[in-house]
Image 1 (cartoon, rainbow, N blue to C red):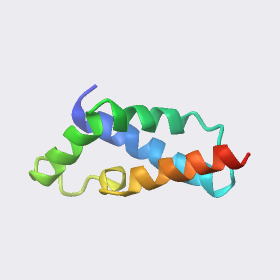
Image 2: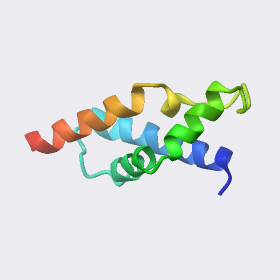
Image 3: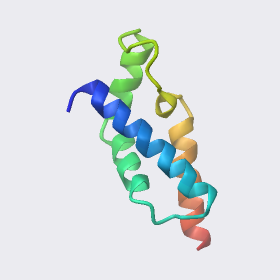
Image 4: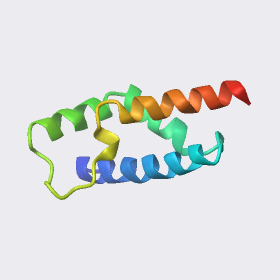
Length: 83
């Protein structure tokens, strides 16, 4: 998988996870996938590529917003604890 494919896949997972969170679905498989993306260093590499201007300007990249993924995962954690 190329970097651009990975970002697109994580962006799709991010959108699905946000929708799952909105309805209180903590069981979505996208949450662990996104947590691994953040923890394994891929998110940082992708973020740095974006900051360096190496990604296509029209590419959707909400998952790379500095706090968006962290905040989503924190909300998922809170949802799991409250369940």
